[in-house]
Length: 496
Ligand SMILES: Cc1ncc(COP(=O)(O)O)c(C=O)c1O
Image 1: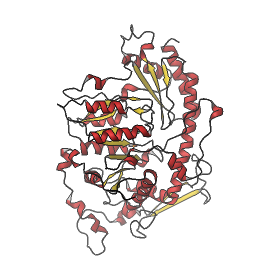
Image 2 (image 1 turned 90 degrees about the horizontal axis):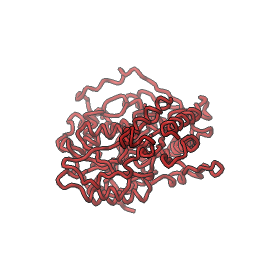
Image 3 (image 1 turned 180 degrees about the horizontal axis):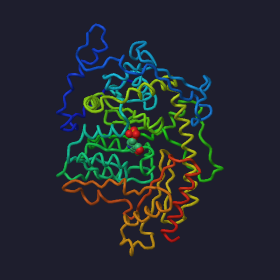
Image 4 (image 1 turned 90 degrees about the vertical axis):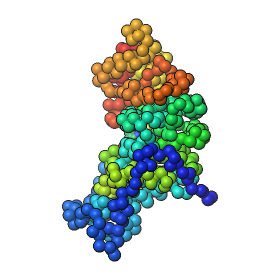
């Protein structure tokens, strides 16, 4: 099948992006590698002054027969040895490794070729890209990618759309840049397409229309919900109708699991007969539906290899990524060279299949953690219509939906204000020795001036509050204990 090029979305760029010029110094840096050029053009220290000659790391070896939580023994049978030397052995891109003389040097703002080629192949394998001029840019993870995205597309006073509850850092990063985050309601299955459409159809024409939908489709933070493939198709259609870009922030994409079965005897962890079967089991991404270059996908190694790698990537059209590259040349320059050398050295040895084996192992681990958390919620959260559990099928988070109006003192002590009940629950749970965090911390509350119609701001459940917990951070015994404390605190608070 031949596929076409992406559309041009440069009309959606911010004033800053439209004004930005490429640094002329960056236009000649590649000549540093050219043996025919005596390079007197830039302040690049000679690599002999880099004190590291040889970087060696060990990781487990695919197919990770003993699971993914075990340290490798150091023996060749279960250990992947990565050795990265200072000096270039072969031409850039010809080897598995990024020599330190290059990774620790300036240049390669787009990312090192050995890293990019792995991620490009992975992207095609998993998402089956549907237009020709897509590309990849190395990043320092999704936090930085989001900050860049805001600067590339938004002017002060612009409004973007996001799930009603969303990752708080993303809201605060937007607000700090003077960008309003207008909420779109979500339910147990993620963002509600009908509400998105109605918000956009009824957008107050006296205000600037949103250019961007920020969404966390898989294992949404904080609600733990995941968008169905059908909803994604609908949302993409709405984005086309309203000339909206979709920004999918997907750090939890590979933490997809089996649906929760309440009865343990019915549980049977899916075993994949092949990598292909695993890939086919994954939810469709927005970028896999994209034929126009309307989707920008932010991926990160934080949740599957380690947050301190500070390494991730963006997938988008080459036209859009050019703007990111120009910004990064003047901000981050590039993700850490150590990180790229270690991660590319490891992944290029594991291979695409080995990385998928790792992700399958990760899925297995989180499946178990999720089951333990949800079992404990059903065991310890008092049975009452006041509480609703929505077992996640992806990610690291569970939420408990609470009907604040069921609190016996809702109308009296709390003046019928759900946020006061939420605060009281929060104080009670912390005093009970467990930390789960209130939905208020994640609530997008932005509006335009003049405001949007009241119907657009209508919440699904005005007395509903949520609490977010994670099954990622502690071992299973502590997880159960924490949820037990949470349940006891609620029992006391709601006098059950
Ligand atoms: C939705 C979402 N986006 C981004 C991040 C941060 O990712 P990174 O470590 O890649 O910056 C998180 C981390 O909690 C997250 O939940």
